[in-house]
Image (cartoon, rainbow, N blue to C red; front, side, top):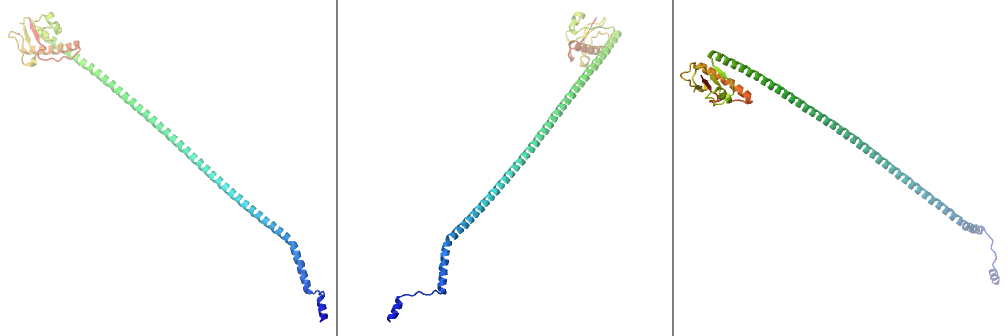
Length: 264
């Protein structure tokens, strides 16, 4: 018993077996792993930093591309706006040119219309002047013809009166009415335009106009009533025209304005 206690008190070294070898290798591996752990952390950090750097670069690249795209879109919009503004300016210029041409054409048409109107008025004025000249010429010709007719009638009347005087021996006092009394000495010359007949050896008498149907003849008158009417009619026409010519006015003979005075 005592011997067993002595062996137990003194611990004998145990022989190393395969298990011990494996444990020893495990311990050595753990120590080696512990010694390599800082290097693994550094490598992971570097990889993480690389990934972050790549992500940042990718984000920057994406932002750059987005900025380029926005800039390109902005430039395109500006180019479109500029092109639109140019087109609008060109359209406005063409519209202004068209309006200017239209105004010019309207002004030319208005000028032509005014010229035509002025020419028409001048033509109308020329026609009016020509018509006035023709009317004046016709009036002058009419007056000339009327004067010729009056002169012809006067000559005929004078010829008729001369023939009547030659046949009857009556002398005509060819003076205006105002001078009849003083020149012819007739007491029957108060009436205006009073022609005077003088007959030899005939008593004083006064004969009214033949158309009044109031003619009275002195019983001692030696000539016929027909001769007296003819003589009074001829003298009426003669003195009416002569007086109208002298006083430049128309003379309208009425009853009592012309009488015929016969004295011895």
